[in-house]
Length: 268
Ligand code: BGC
Image (cartoon, rainbow, N blue to C red; front, side, top):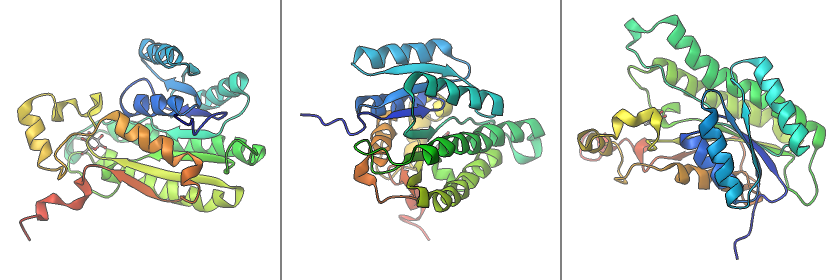
């Protein structure tokens, strides 16, 4: 019998209409959580995901919001609460890349990535924390008053030429996550990061869409396969469950060994 670890809980997952966010939404719904599928542009994909979750007996709604806009974020939380009445899990997943060499990078490319990837996580964490603190631990629901996941990347620690905006946002997420974890632990709120490596999603299509590109990518992955959204979804569902109740302030890398510096396996 499959035990639904997150039964009676609800979650907001930002950027859940595709890629890793979709994988996380599916996994959390499968574990019994009611989920708000946040999207900013692709209403159709978000609705399809809601339908898929419902088809499998889960509960879900789609909520449009740009996480970099405070007004949108406040409205998203209000909508979630008006439907589900409480919140137990916040997954800060929405993120994007605007790649360019440093000398060509526009301020707009820099700012958009920082606004969505980093400021968006700040805004959503702040609103989630307010609810968790007010709610406190809900007996019989979860040992924690709330759980926050900050979706990071292997580029939290691996420098990435040609992507300084993205790498800086992920480096920032590490300290955002750790400082939040320190501040919120006394309220029984757990905050952790997930650092995916190369996961097969639209964001890195160029790196896997041809066999030549994929083979080049695999030289960076000792475990020799590209990751799938379900890999990250399964980790997220466990990390927000009570089985992981003593974990806070940590980034878990899920990368097939990308952070093992494979270039050193026969070198150095
Ligand atoms: C990036 C992907 C990249 C992966 C490994 C992720 O954070 O979004 O584009 O393939 O890191 O480099």
